[in-house]
Image (spheres, rainbow, N blue to C red):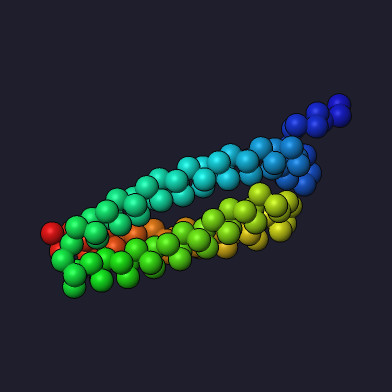
Length: 118
C-alpha cells in the first residue's frame, strides 16, 4: 500500500512539505499576534513614561528603546521566516525563538522597573 502524500513517511519520519508549510504558517501567525500584543504593551509603557517625572521618564524611555530594538529583531526574524523554507526555515526559527526569549526577558525587566517607580 502506497502512503498518501499527507501522511508521514514511515521511513524518514519527516513531515511532508505540505505539513511543514502549514506548521510554518501557523507559527508565523502566532508570532505576528504576539508581536502585536507586545507592541500594544510597549505603547502603554510609552504613555506611562510621558506621565512620569523627568528623571523617571529618562529611565522609562531607555527601557522602551531597548524593547523596541528587541522587537525590531523579532520582526526581522518573522520576515525571514516568511521568506524561508526547509532547513533554512528551521535555522531562522531557532534564531527567532532566541530573539523572542531575549524580548520576553527585557519586557519582564522593564515591567518590574515600571512597577517599582509607581
